[in-house]
Amino acid sequence: MLRTAAGLLLAAGVLPVCFADVARAQANAESDSADGSALIDQTTLPSAVDLKGSRPQADPSVLPPAATTLPESMESLQAPPSLALPDQTNQVRIRELRPLTLAEVEQLAEVNNPNLKAVVSQVQQAKSGLRAALARWYPTLDLSANGLPQYLGGEQQNFDQRRTENINPVTGESTPTGVPAGVRTTTSRWSANFGARLNWNLIDPGRVPEIAAARDTYERSREAYLIALRELRLQVALDYFTLQRRDEQVRIGQQSVRASIVSLRDARARFQAGVATKLEVLEAITQLARDQQLLTNAIGDQAEVRRSLAATLDLPQDVTPTAAAPARVIGTWIPSLQESIVAAYAFREELDQLLLDISINNSNANLSLSAVQPVLSIFNNFSTQRFQGEANVVNPPEDQVYGWSFDNAVGLSASWNIFDGGRARARYRQNKQRAEESRFNFATQRNTIRSEVEASFYELRESQQDIRTTAREVLSATESLRLARLRFQAGVTTQREVVDNQRDLTNAQVRYADAVLNYNGSLAQLRRRTGLDQVQSCPAIDLPAEKPEELGVGQVLIEPTPYRSSCEASQMGV
Image (cartoon, rainbow, N blue to C red; front, side, top):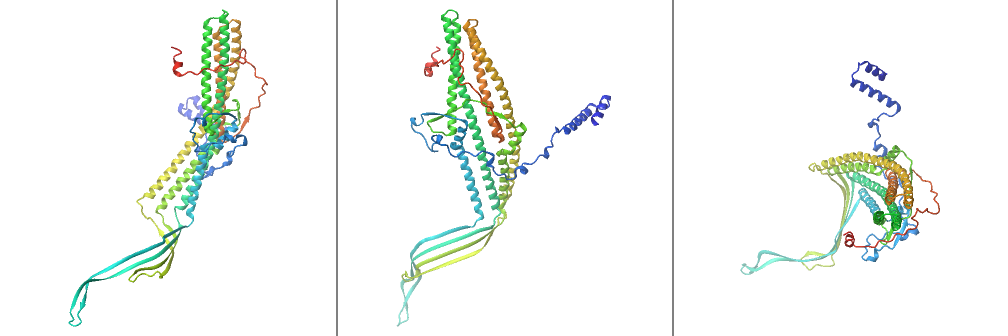
């Protein structure tokens, strides 16, 4: 009704333009709310604390467990000792090229990768830290001993400054003798002392927050392990796809070199027959040099990627991995974009880690306040002593004198740091502010996760279209090259047309290989970033038993290029 009335008033010129826009927007909003496409009130979205809990725990079931052992067929690929360091050239010389599938590469990475082992060690460290924090619930017992045994020996002489006098018994007169009076004491004593103190904090305000922070730290390390496992699987898959791409580039380079050799052979034959010019021969030579450079670069990139994958897998020093299968499209991603985003929010451990950071900072804040809170303890002190011998006696000490004693005290003790200059309260505010920072980081990470999923999803669609277009381009370029060769052999065209079509075919094959690599990489990223594995595999390809030979190429051999130093190579064009 509002929309109709606004339209009538606008037509009659009664409503101004600005009010008409407001009425139109309100009418559109009512229409959107009717079909469910209206904007959602963001304050009604559920809280992550309600969905995951304030202290989420790691759930290893969301990921297939990592492999811990290698099958018998791959025992020779066990990682060398962590501190192994070759010191001779024959120890790093490559002796085996081992073809591996993607599943085998992932298994080797999970067993051998040193970074994953380091993360596992960090989990064990956090577990030990939790056990150390739990020890605050238990009493402590301290033993001490002073001398087991100890011997005390000594001698002491005391002098009196007053002089002794001799009294004459007849006259009664006294005469000083000049000899001072004194006492001499000696000590010779064996003793053994032993003490024990049992203490138990009945009231300890810092105990609970410290244990809570340690438990959250342990859970955070477990989340870090799941993240590292996901990242390792993604990195290994991307490296393997890149290796397949380099293998495909080597194949394309070899095919281009063979085609250039055939073109050069045909051009020379026609030149010798007098039906072609030297320009066509030079064009064929130039194209061959260009394709040889392409092949050289592809072989170098292939070797680099192989050794990079070997480092990730931590293979023996004399083994280099190769791709056992050519590049093929893995499958089709089934979930929609919205399902992928929601799944990423539910499965990504990075969000759980930030929630644990909030809990850890809150626990640290409470731990800071415990510095100015009272602590009540119960204690039991026990001490005993046994001795043999005498100490500080005038006569020579007797070894037959011995004895023993013990004391035992039980009581309560309390301590309370009432004022510390505001240090505890400042630490409390600092940790609360860190918890607030973690909340902001949670929002940033949430937006990052959605951006990553959307980027991978859109790249997957783009690569899917690229595969279709580049596949048609490869087919048309192949047919164009075949027709150009036939026309050149028939003498109705020049070598330039063959060279151009051959270059177009090479570029089309490179773009097709890139499209397949990007597609598989985006698919692997969606698996990693959503936690889903809903991929429909492609049907098996029914290929002929024999590979069709390209026209005129056949089994053309590529002669190895002699190695020349850079100085010698630079002087060839002078």
